[in-house]
Length: 233
Image: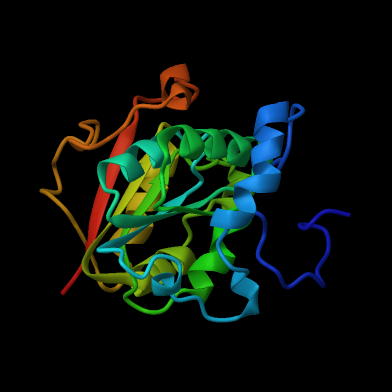
């Protein structure tokens, strides 16, 4: 019986698919055993989670949800070694790949939550994050699966809650329907305002956007669409 068929399950529907595919390469598997425990985010289900405990000297706190293979997260972290970059990714092959990028880059400011991002967001204090980055989340583009999309009214409100005044949220997708779905929900989320004019070309990437191998595959039905929002002061 799946989540849709069991009326007794009260946990949120999973917003992601498989958590492991091909066998993890030996070097990356070794990093899962050695490096991951050193940079893993404490279990958010254990209680409130203050980012200051992970990197007390951090000038800012960034949260990337669904970092895929970790290319974008590592590149962003390298540009701002003074910022704590927390990455969430339940796909274990992606986590293993990200660990390689962290090791090769000598990155000391990355922390990883290898599980559902919603648990982490729920555990974070109000106004504790400077940036939320959501790049190419699973589109669940069949109408009957839309309820599994990460971006729902509830998650949009949760992102607004954890953002500091002036903090930003970036959402990127290569599925036009998901962009429209997201725009509708972010527009009605109290406390958020869109950055730029309403008629601004949403195909123009921000200056600091990092193109990844996933983006280059062009798996969606449109060129990447970029939505940027700010937490009102």
